[in-house]
Amino acid sequence: MPRRHLRVVTLAFLALALAGCAVPPSTQPSSTQPSLSPGEAVPLLTQPSPHPGEVCLAARISGVLTADPTYGLGLWRNGAVRGILWPHGYSARYELGGIVLINPSGRIVAREGDDVVMAGFTSDDRISHPCNEPNGVEVVR
Image 1: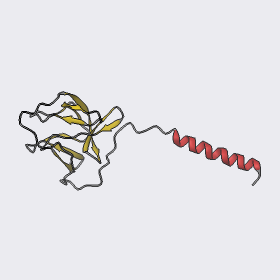
Image 2 (image 1 turned 120 degrees about the vertical axis):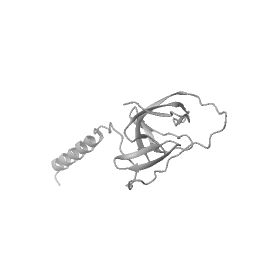
Image 3 (image 1 turned 90 degrees about the vertical axis):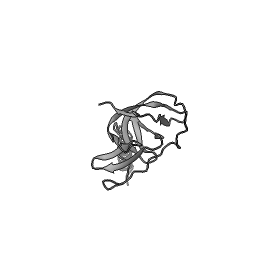
Image 4 (image 1 turned 180 degrees about the vertical axis):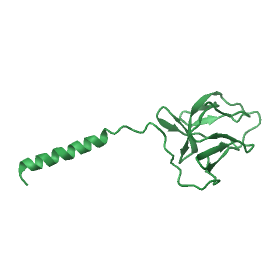
């Protein structure tokens, strides 16, 4: 191959490689759950059973509820999904349109894609720990 053709091929390859690096990251969370059937339970990481008289360090935790392969549901905020260690007794299941969050009473309190706020704290490892309160998760739309 003549030297000129090699230079053109090299420049074309370099341009394609740089173009791939220039693609902006996604600005929206994507569902990372495998395909589920409606009504199927979604594994949700929860805190151990509550201890009587335990005090919850309350600050505000907020974000968009989104599927997370580690926690079941996390919060999308500031361009990243944050893990949530849900209060004891919470669960989740897949329904048409996404995953729903269910409180210990069995009531759906939020759906994937909802903008939610709750009392709780975020630990040094950037995992959020909501308080287990009667009005624990509030949809703010």
